[in-house]
Every structure is written in C-alpha cells, then in structure tokens.
Figure (cartoon, rainbow, N blue to C red):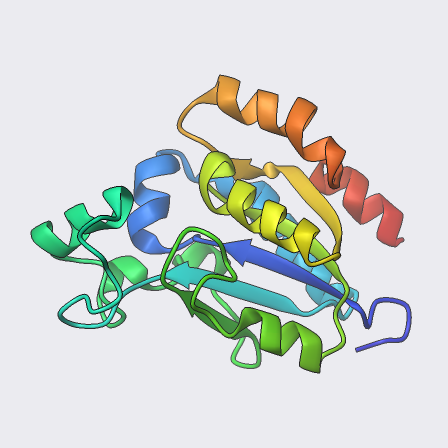
Length: 189
C-alpha cells in the first residue's frame, strides 16, 4: 500500500452470483463497479469483497429473522454454493480478501472490523447491491464506528430506483460523501 491511500479500502459488497443475477439483467450496470475496482487496484487501495452466505444447516439464521428465515426453509445461499461466490465480472485477485457476513451489514458476524483495524483503515469507499440493504446497513454502522465514508452512487444498485435516489441524494450525504465512480477516480489522480 502506498502512503497516500494506506488508510483507505474499497468495499465491494454482495456482488455475488445469486444477487447480481437478480439486480443486473444487463452486465453494463456492473461497469461502474469494475471501474472502481480497477482504479483502486491501480492506486494500491485494498479491495475487500463482502458476501452473504450461511453454514450448512443454517445455524446462523433465527426463525424470527424475517429476511433470512425464508432462506433456511427454501435452501440455498450456503458458503459453498455457486450463488454465494463473487460474480465473475468483478473477480477478486488472489491477494484480495473475501469476507463472509451473516446479516445485512458487512460488519454483522464477519471479521471485517478486525481486518480494518489491523490494516489501520479509517476511510471506506462503499459500493454494493443493494442500496437499501447492505449499503445502507453498512454505511450506518460504519458511521457509528467513526469511519470516513464515501458512497459510490453509480456503483450501488437497488430494485427500486426511487429508494436508491432518496438514499443517495438525501440520506447518505448526512454521513458520507456521495460521488460517482468517475468523480471518485478523478480525485485519486
């Protein structure tokens, strides 16, 4: 890591096969993610991939959890299944980490915070699917943990464009800088 960016990391969250297939019917919507990852790599900014997956038998899922309890009944989303692997369009380099989480926030049940502390990361560049899911939950928790935050608005996808707009234009700016990938990259130059 170089000195200029040694306290920054790019989080690429929930860009796993099973989620990308539901949100990105056209691969062109993944271009901003690809550009952000490439720029981070060129500027020696660590890229950390985050995925949601569960152990066989779903011991992490409480029946009261409205979002995840359906998964434990229908099956799928275990750590070894194809649906939980990072999408090939943003394939991690061998040296890049893939963190597994067990809830919506990237911090919930994962070792992300331990890794960030050990690497002395205090600035997070946030991207992911979905804006109203992992991005919102992670941003709120990271803000409470006093990270310096930037959200890449066009490297976030949501099933509801209006929800995405309200979050990126009205909610996120209260706790983070909100930039397009191009604007973020130009700030790195």
